[in-house]
Image (cartoon, rainbow, N blue to C red; front, side, top):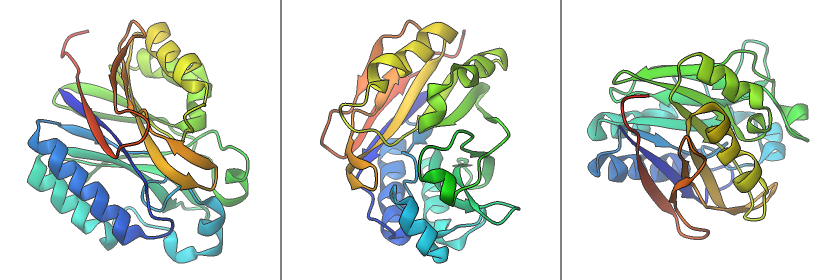
Amino acid sequence: MIVAATQFAPVAGDIAANVRSIAETVRAAGAEGARVVVFAELSLTGYEPSLVHRSPDLVLTEDDPRLDPLREACRAAGAAAVVNGPVRTPGGRPGITTLVLGPDGTLLTRYDKQHLYGVEAEVFAPGIADGRFTLDGLRFALATCYDNRFPELAEQAAADSCRVYLASSVLSADNDSFETVYPVRARDFGLYVVLGNVLGPNEDGVGGGLAGAWGPDGARLADAGPDKPGYVLVDVPDGR
Protein backbone atom coordinates (compact mmCIF):
# COMPACT_ATOMS: atom_id res chain seq x y z
CA MET A 1 0.00 0.00 0.00
CA ILE A 2 1.45 3.34 -1.05
CA VAL A 3 0.09 6.44 0.71
CA ALA A 4 0.83 9.99 -0.46
CA ALA A 5 1.21 12.81 2.08
CA THR A 6 0.55 16.16 0.43
CA GLN A 7 1.04 19.87 0.93
CA PHE A 8 -0.08 22.91 -1.04
CA ALA A 9 -1.28 26.47 -0.44
CA PRO A 10 -5.09 26.55 -0.71
CA VAL A 11 -6.75 29.66 -2.14
CA ALA A 12 -8.88 31.20 0.61
CA GLY A 13 -12.55 30.62 -0.11
CA ASP A 14 -12.03 29.32 -3.67
CA ILE A 15 -13.40 25.78 -3.62
CA ALA A 16 -13.14 25.34 -7.39
CA ALA A 17 -9.45 26.29 -7.47
CA ASN A 18 -8.65 24.07 -4.50
CA VAL A 19 -10.55 21.11 -5.97
CA ARG A 20 -8.50 21.51 -9.15
CA SER A 21 -5.24 21.47 -7.19
CA ILE A 22 -6.35 18.47 -5.15
CA ALA A 23 -7.54 16.57 -8.23
CA GLU A 24 -4.25 17.23 -10.04
CA THR A 25 -2.32 15.93 -7.05
CA VAL A 26 -4.46 12.79 -6.85
CA ARG A 27 -3.83 12.07 -10.53
CA ALA A 28 -0.09 12.66 -10.20
CA ALA A 29 0.32 10.60 -7.03
CA GLY A 30 -1.89 7.85 -8.42
CA ALA A 31 0.32 7.66 -11.50
CA GLU A 32 3.22 6.88 -9.15
CA GLY A 33 1.30 4.10 -7.44
CA ALA A 34 -0.40 5.90 -4.56
CA ARG A 35 -3.59 4.20 -3.45
CA VAL A 36 -4.49 6.79 -0.76
CA VAL A 37 -3.73 10.53 -0.98
CA VAL A 38 -4.00 12.61 2.21
CA PHE A 39 -4.63 16.38 2.30
CA ALA A 40 -4.56 19.05 5.00
CA GLU A 41 -7.28 20.32 7.31
CA LEU A 42 -9.81 22.56 5.47
CA SER A 43 -7.90 22.02 2.24
CA LEU A 44 -11.11 22.59 0.25
CA THR A 45 -11.55 26.19 1.45
CA GLY A 46 -8.26 27.05 3.10
CA TYR A 47 -7.98 27.28 6.87
CA GLU A 48 -10.27 30.30 7.19
CA PRO A 49 -12.87 29.65 9.94
CA SER A 50 -14.01 33.29 10.06
CA LEU A 51 -14.49 33.37 6.28
CA VAL A 52 -16.53 30.17 6.44
CA HIS A 53 -18.66 31.74 9.19
CA ARG A 54 -19.39 34.77 6.98
CA SER A 55 -19.92 32.76 3.79
CA PRO A 56 -22.57 30.02 4.00
CA ASP A 57 -21.93 29.12 0.36
CA LEU A 58 -18.57 27.67 1.42
CA VAL A 59 -20.32 24.88 3.34
CA LEU A 60 -20.43 21.67 1.33
CA THR A 61 -22.56 18.54 1.42
CA GLU A 62 -21.33 14.97 1.20
CA ASP A 63 -22.62 14.68 -2.38
CA ASP A 64 -21.71 18.23 -3.36
CA PRO A 65 -21.34 18.57 -7.17
CA ARG A 66 -18.39 20.91 -6.64
CA LEU A 67 -16.41 17.78 -5.73
CA ASP A 68 -17.20 16.04 -9.03
CA PRO A 69 -13.78 16.81 -10.58
CA LEU A 70 -12.16 15.17 -7.57
CA ARG A 71 -14.39 12.11 -7.84
CA GLU A 72 -13.37 11.78 -11.48
CA ALA A 73 -9.70 12.14 -10.55
CA CYS A 74 -10.07 9.31 -8.01
CA ARG A 75 -11.59 7.08 -10.66
CA ALA A 76 -8.92 7.98 -13.20
CA ALA A 77 -6.06 7.46 -10.74
CA GLY A 78 -7.49 4.43 -8.94
CA ALA A 79 -6.77 6.20 -5.67
CA ALA A 80 -8.72 7.32 -2.62
CA ALA A 81 -8.62 11.02 -1.68
CA VAL A 82 -8.73 12.07 1.99
CA VAL A 83 -9.96 15.68 1.81
CA ASN A 84 -11.16 18.08 4.46
CA GLY A 85 -13.57 21.00 4.42
CA PRO A 86 -16.64 22.54 6.05
CA VAL A 87 -19.44 20.01 5.51
CA ARG A 88 -23.01 20.34 6.69
CA THR A 89 -24.12 18.40 9.77
CA PRO A 90 -27.69 17.51 10.80
CA GLY A 91 -27.55 20.14 13.55
CA GLY A 92 -27.01 23.01 11.12
CA ARG A 93 -23.43 24.04 11.80
CA PRO A 94 -20.76 22.57 9.53
CA GLY A 95 -18.18 20.15 10.81
CA ILE A 96 -14.48 20.30 10.07
CA THR A 97 -15.03 17.22 8.02
CA THR A 98 -12.83 14.67 6.33
CA LEU A 99 -14.47 12.98 3.37
CA VAL A 100 -12.74 9.88 2.03
CA LEU A 101 -13.60 9.45 -1.64
CA GLY A 102 -12.74 5.95 -2.78
CA PRO A 103 -10.98 4.83 -5.96
CA ASP A 104 -14.41 4.57 -7.60
CA GLY A 105 -15.35 8.10 -6.52
CA THR A 106 -17.88 7.03 -3.90
CA LEU A 107 -17.81 8.09 -0.26
CA LEU A 108 -15.98 5.53 1.89
CA THR A 109 -16.43 7.36 5.19
CA ARG A 110 -16.83 10.72 6.87
CA TYR A 111 -15.05 11.99 9.97
CA ASP A 112 -15.86 15.22 11.84
CA LYS A 113 -13.07 16.72 13.96
CA GLN A 114 -13.83 15.99 17.60
CA HIS A 115 -11.58 18.47 19.41
CA LEU A 116 -12.11 22.02 18.16
CA TYR A 117 -9.44 24.65 18.73
CA GLY A 118 -9.95 28.37 19.47
CA VAL A 119 -12.26 30.16 17.04
CA GLU A 120 -13.27 26.83 15.49
CA ALA A 121 -15.72 26.27 18.35
CA GLU A 122 -17.62 29.42 17.34
CA VAL A 123 -18.11 28.22 13.76
CA PHE A 124 -18.11 24.44 13.65
CA ALA A 125 -19.84 21.53 15.38
CA PRO A 126 -17.60 18.92 17.04
CA GLY A 127 -17.82 15.34 15.87
CA ILE A 128 -18.64 12.44 18.13
CA ALA A 129 -17.73 9.36 16.06
CA ASP A 130 -14.37 7.86 15.14
CA GLY A 131 -13.38 7.78 11.47
CA ARG A 132 -12.42 4.44 9.97
CA PHE A 133 -12.19 2.86 6.54
CA THR A 134 -10.65 -0.23 4.99
CA LEU A 135 -9.00 -0.38 1.58
CA ASP A 136 -7.26 -3.40 0.08
CA GLY A 137 -7.52 -5.14 3.45
CA LEU A 138 -5.70 -2.34 5.30
CA ARG A 139 -7.55 -0.46 8.05
CA PHE A 140 -7.17 3.32 8.39
CA ALA A 141 -8.01 5.82 11.15
CA LEU A 142 -8.70 9.54 10.68
CA ALA A 143 -7.81 12.50 12.91
CA THR A 144 -7.65 16.25 12.34
CA CYS A 145 -4.95 18.60 13.65
CA TYR A 146 -5.78 19.37 17.34
CA ASP A 147 -7.32 15.90 17.66
CA ASN A 148 -3.81 14.53 17.58
CA ARG A 149 -3.00 16.18 20.91
CA PHE A 150 -5.31 13.60 22.52
CA PRO A 151 -3.54 10.22 22.62
CA GLU A 152 -6.76 8.30 23.26
CA LEU A 153 -7.73 8.73 19.59
CA ALA A 154 -4.60 6.93 18.43
CA GLU A 155 -4.95 4.41 21.23
CA GLN A 156 -8.47 3.58 20.07
CA ALA A 157 -7.30 3.36 16.46
CA ALA A 158 -4.75 0.73 17.44
CA ALA A 159 -7.39 -1.13 19.47
CA ASP A 160 -9.61 -1.13 16.38
CA SER A 161 -6.87 -2.89 14.39
CA CYS A 162 -5.99 0.20 12.35
CA ARG A 163 -2.52 0.14 10.85
CA VAL A 164 -2.41 3.64 9.38
CA TYR A 165 -3.38 6.86 11.19
CA LEU A 166 -4.09 9.71 8.76
CA ALA A 167 -3.65 13.23 10.17
CA SER A 168 -5.02 16.20 8.22
CA SER A 169 -3.52 19.29 9.85
CA VAL A 170 -2.62 22.99 9.61
CA LEU A 171 0.78 23.50 11.21
CA SER A 172 3.43 26.20 11.10
CA ALA A 173 7.03 25.10 10.75
CA ASP A 174 7.77 25.78 14.44
CA ASN A 175 4.84 23.74 15.76
CA ASP A 176 6.11 21.25 18.34
CA SER A 177 3.78 18.52 17.04
CA PHE A 178 6.47 17.41 14.59
CA GLU A 179 8.55 16.26 17.58
CA THR A 180 6.12 15.73 20.45
CA VAL A 181 2.92 14.45 18.85
CA TYR A 182 3.14 12.59 15.53
CA PRO A 183 6.23 10.46 16.17
CA VAL A 184 5.00 9.76 19.70
CA ARG A 185 1.59 8.54 18.52
CA ALA A 186 3.33 6.30 15.99
CA ARG A 187 5.76 4.83 18.53
CA ASP A 188 3.37 4.50 21.46
CA PHE A 189 0.65 2.70 19.48
CA GLY A 190 2.58 0.93 16.72
CA LEU A 191 0.99 2.93 13.90
CA TYR A 192 2.08 4.40 10.62
CA VAL A 193 1.21 8.10 10.97
CA VAL A 194 0.77 10.02 7.71
CA LEU A 195 0.44 13.82 7.83
CA GLY A 196 -1.08 16.13 5.23
CA ASN A 197 -0.21 19.78 5.90
CA VAL A 198 -0.47 23.21 4.25
CA LEU A 199 1.76 25.89 2.82
CA GLY A 200 1.14 29.61 2.67
CA PRO A 201 -0.74 32.14 4.82
CA ASN A 202 -4.00 31.25 6.54
CA GLU A 203 -6.07 32.45 9.47
CA ASP A 204 -3.82 30.59 11.92
CA GLY A 205 -0.51 31.87 10.51
CA VAL A 206 1.71 30.43 7.78
CA GLY A 207 1.70 26.75 6.87
CA GLY A 208 5.06 25.11 7.31
CA GLY A 209 4.79 22.08 5.03
CA LEU A 210 6.86 19.11 6.26
CA ALA A 211 4.07 16.71 5.25
CA GLY A 212 5.16 13.11 5.48
CA ALA A 213 5.09 10.04 7.67
CA TRP A 214 6.46 8.29 10.75
CA GLY A 215 6.86 4.55 11.19
CA PRO A 216 5.77 2.43 14.17
CA ASP A 217 9.14 3.04 15.79
CA GLY A 218 8.60 6.81 15.65
CA ALA A 219 11.22 7.40 12.96
CA ARG A 220 10.55 9.77 10.06
CA LEU A 221 9.88 7.81 6.87
CA ALA A 222 9.18 10.71 4.50
CA ASP A 223 9.35 14.52 4.55
CA ALA A 224 8.06 16.84 1.81
CA GLY A 225 10.18 19.75 3.01
CA PRO A 226 9.14 23.20 4.27
CA ASP A 227 8.24 25.16 1.15
CA LYS A 228 7.47 23.28 -2.08
CA PRO A 229 3.97 22.08 -3.01
CA GLY A 230 3.63 18.42 -3.85
CA TYR A 231 3.69 15.09 -2.06
CA VAL A 232 5.86 12.28 -0.76
CA LEU A 233 5.10 8.59 -0.99
CA VAL A 234 5.07 6.17 1.93
CA ASP A 235 5.11 2.40 1.48
CA VAL A 236 3.10 0.71 4.22
CA PRO A 237 3.68 -3.06 4.51
CA ASP A 238 0.60 -5.24 4.58
CA GLY A 239 1.40 -7.24 7.71
CA ARG A 240 1.46 -6.00 11.29
